[in-house]
Length: 244
Figure 1 (tube, rainbow, N blue to C red):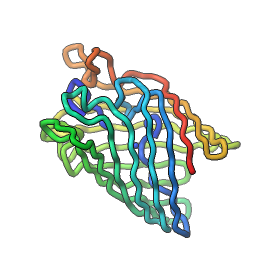
Figure 2 (cartoon, one colour):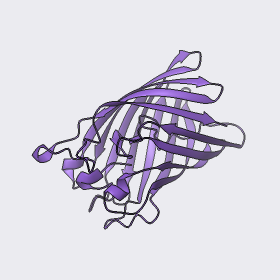
Figure 3 (cartoon, rainbow, N blue to C red):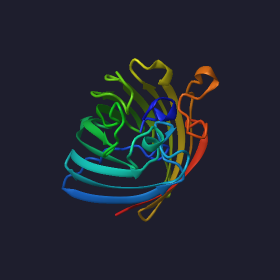
Figure 4 (cartoon, helix red, strand yellow):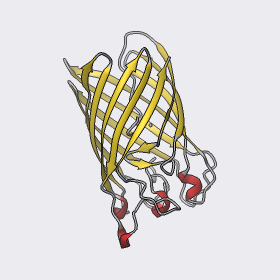
């Protein structure tokens, strides 16, 4: 995601970021489809503050998992490229270190078919996440350039979150993260979100307060739409997703 047009870091509501499958004792295949009022990833809009349609499939066996997820986007075309979809492919292994403590390690690649940007938007990260009770800390490390930023290999994202079970299928998820864009400090920032979700027999409805502290060099937001709108501004994102 590119410079002032949208260095936006391109899978959970509030981001609709990708989460690994839980460890289970047998093979399982699961699907999901959904929509959001604004696709925010790491706090930055991928859709020019407009809605997006999304869906994915996950396979898991024991602690091992593989999956793919896709969403409509707008930022590639805003940056002068030619892709209107993001396709994520990921895999990893999740295992228990001790009672109540799990470690999740894996790799995730973000693909933007035929994006045609000068520096390819395609990005690959390796990650490790540690969960203790309701708390999770996760670090993702870029092994390629990051979402079209030139000379940005070895960028990193630190994510801290908690999953609070409110009962009756309801959860509250506070989150804070920090995105470092290597050698492009103007585009580094902190993001935050607070997501409420309700599971109604596989149908998940959610509302998330999402925001960032992105910089404004020269008075212009670092992540800005062609119309001059701040793509990291605080907003409420509504979403619906069905798991089957």
